[in-house]
Image (tube, rainbow over all chains, first blue to last red; front, side, top):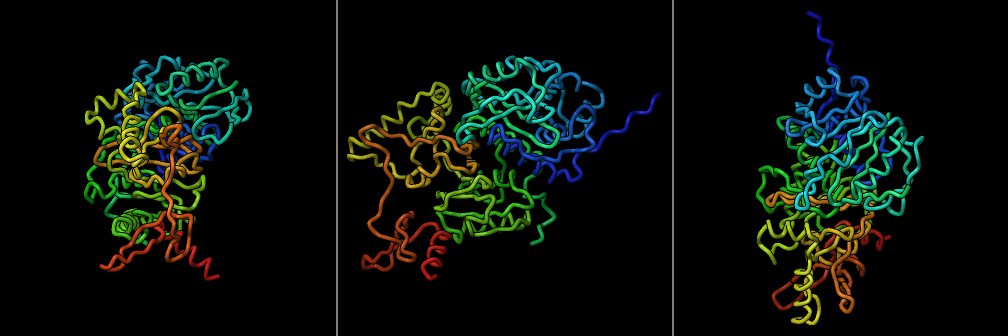
Amino acid sequence: MTMETELSPGFQEPVHGAQQTFRAVLDALSRPGIPVPLSGIEAAPDPMGPTLAAAALTLLDHETGVYLAPPLDIEAVKRYIAFHTGAPTVSEPADADFVIALADRDMPDILQLKTGCAEYPDQSATVLLGVRDFGSGEKVLLSGPGIAETQEFSPGNLDAGFWTTARQNHARFPLGVDFILCGPESVAGLPRSTSIAV
Amino acid sequence: MEREKAYNFAYLDEQTKRMIRRAILKAVAIPGYQVPFASREMPMPYGWGTGGVQVTASVLGQDDVLKVIDQGADDTTNAVSIRKFFKKTAGVETTTETGRASVIQTRHRVPEDELRPDQILVYQVPIPEPLRFLEPRETETRTMHALEEYGLMHVKLYEDISRHGHIATTYAYPVHVNARYMMDPSPIPKFDNPKLHRMAALQLFGAGREKRIYAVPPHTQVHSLDFDDHPFEVQKWDKACAICGAEDSFLDEIITDDAGGRMFVCSDTDYCNRQCEGVAK
């Protein structure tokens, strides 16, 4: 029998680590398109970055089904999420409360995720999306709640069709999914309420 | 002050905080929509701000500076006890100065000072549903919000006008958020309603007994309902504050004797204090 690989640690201080991460995520979602600095968990298993891991450990628990999109559906990440959060993994994206994905890799069809219903639009999925950076991608102009006038946003390595899908997502408001984009050292929010001009 | 180590940081357990944090994020993503949450029993009775306390406990960190006001005052029972509660369970610094606070929990007022982007305003909410007194059934009000069917509230305001000649609603004045959801701004005087519109700070609302959380993100459009021929108006006084002389603040009427004597003073005690210092200089 082979030795199990060592389990990577979570937050050094779980209470304060989660609180600081939550405030960064809250700030990010309150001001769409403005990256908020977040140190994250350095020891996160590859290919999960430090901020993606921190967001997951802050928001997930046994009440939230999580879908790990390839290449994150590997044993190391599954065990990491299971041990630190207790969140059950689901095999269908449409059943997930949280989807964890990397921007340019097998992202599930956003329009097939849980959107909530007219009476309860909050019963929808949240997508934690790992991105390369917040400056090298296609530039879009955001407006809506949380934005004074307009906000330029250009996260790197998103799929070519991402913005089209994101606009369709916004068109369903108040239904829809919310994105928390996790870069190397910061997070940015893209809630369903944000309108996007390409 | 050293915090009481027998409790988790900020009293709530981590699982509860996560549940509330998820609800807050949904609330921010759908401005004005009431997100149901599993409100906990708190060591204070319902009606004392258990919703606001749970929201504050879920956002509060070690480095935050907390201010708590009740009807604008820092020195009333509710404000003092909630401030002491977080001093004891979270060990955070507290203040009465609006400008120094990073998190402000409030009951029934919005501070007179303009809030900044790095501040969070947490409201205590008794009845989160603006349509509740017009339609008691939750299933019905849910449907009304889903269909954006708000005609009933306009009828109510119209009946005000036909009976009194003006809109007689003076507090908990309904607003339309981001041109979508109708929202109860909590029982703040309608004097404060214009401050909600495009406020730079994030506004979170917690209703403990009714188990709802809702939010207004920064810079969001908040429109107080009105009619073209009866535009929204705020209260005005023909007096200035008897203590500091401010003419732009919300005034409380204080009865001073049993012969009809009265005075008007600022409801925002911090604002009043600073006005006094300014006058002294």
